[in-house]
Image (cartoon, rainbow, N blue to C red):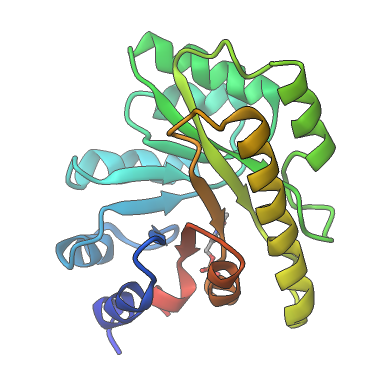
Length: 218
Ligand SMILES: *Cc1c(COP(=O)(O)O)cnc(C)c1O
């Protein structure tokens, strides 16, 4: 099947409440444009130096989501246009995003990335860290940021039960902090979990956004 056929098949099978980030890292602009013409507007990239030329050359109504580990000193390059940074894993990074977004008079959506996998090399906050920061109201003063939800990556394993447990725990945490800290916040809605190999489980466990690359561009 072609890339566009893969894309359509995945998109058309998603439940109505689940959004799709097409993860276009390593893909050439021409291929992104095909998927764009088939109707997709949300694309995810994980490297600043790859995102910048794509932003320059591709249609301006694309909603760019940054999904990789982001160094604070690179935020300024994407702050003029990035829609959502899904991979915020420190207070320092939040502060920098807020500052750079302010320079452009923008609000940038962010998702707090939570470390839910067993692998230690995956980035993200621990549950307790986020709770502590929320309790200290550390996120309240950011005028140029919208905290739009949480993101997580499950352990890379064939053990479905483990993936399900990791996503399920994150969903429970999402509901808990939504209830405790974001109950009157209409922007805190997104639970971004699930990639090519585990997105069906993610949807069953309450995901509202899936990030899919390989299964579209294979
Ligand atoms: C690459 C990547 C994806 C997409 O993974 P696939 O398995 O190719 O679908 C999703 N999320 C993040 C954070 C990624 O880096």
